Length: 111
Image (cartoon, rainbow, N blue to C red; front, side, top):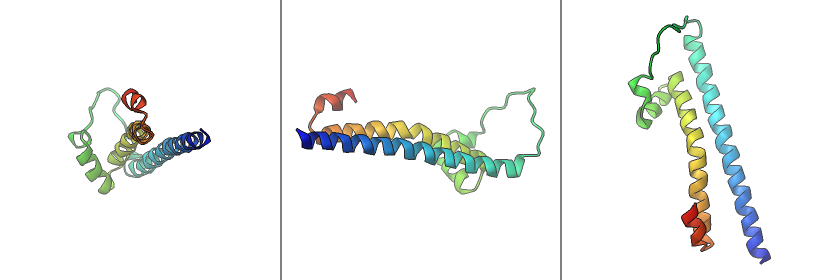
């Protein structure tokens, strides 16, 4: 029973580290994107009288990654948001895998 408890504690620590790392990574990417964006567009006067939707290039993962690799500030910010969204998804996948390794199939199904 103590071996099982140690494994559960280790899994909880890994999940906590995974969530913390994901949020810190996402925040760092967003901050880098904000700096790049403000360096290029910080002096522009915004037009709050009209709503402008996101450009087509920031609507799917492939073009967001391509734009981020091309040092587009908005694309880097979008990539950070995607990383933030992906963090709990990765946590759920990790939890399901951990429950499967423990052969706890009820919790695999619930997860």
